[in-house]
Image 1 (cartoon, one colour):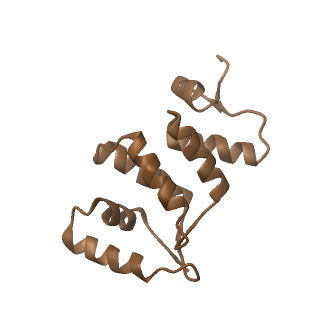
Image 2 (tube, helix red, strand yellow):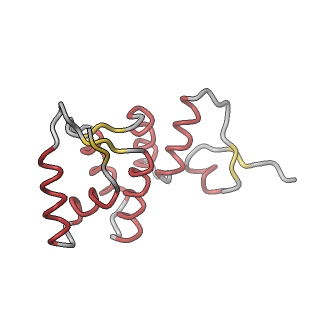
Length: 132
């Protein structure tokens, strides 16, 4: 199994650099269910962020793309359950990174997740830290 960096997936998806896209295409085509590419949660977070911020993809577009990525046999996703849980929350409007933090904390048995980010309390289900 080989690990895939964010830039490989970005080039494969966005196709904005012909030379790098060709390399990414060849690499992705070489993956199989028996020898998948490994995608870490950090790569997922970076990919979502790059697609939304740099390439102006909507959350709906990212959600559809991530649905396909997470269900691809040729990719092994780190902590697939938490990734799918985070994706579902992101498709309801939460920030993907915040939703992934919540999903991982819940799986780890945390009672609640404390943040200083008010938007994370509204969208991802975190609790605002009490004032000092």
